[in-house]
Image (tube, rainbow, N blue to C red; front, side):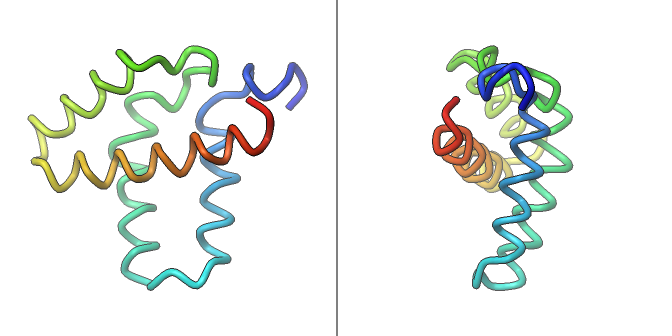
Length: 94
């Protein structure tokens, strides 16, 4: 993270988080759901934002769009994935 954790793109932190998920003892179906939500909802919506650009309104817009397009279950999965990624960012100093 050349410029510091807050300047990292969400997609970069997401890759680090997903590696931890893959190494965890979570159920295979859960890992598959997280990977699907990340690649289909989170990354297309906010993946290129820098961590410091990821505001509450940006997250709300993403989750609202996912809920309207794919339903509340998809929005819940996207929220869970975002929560994990943001937790990873905080642990890394963002």
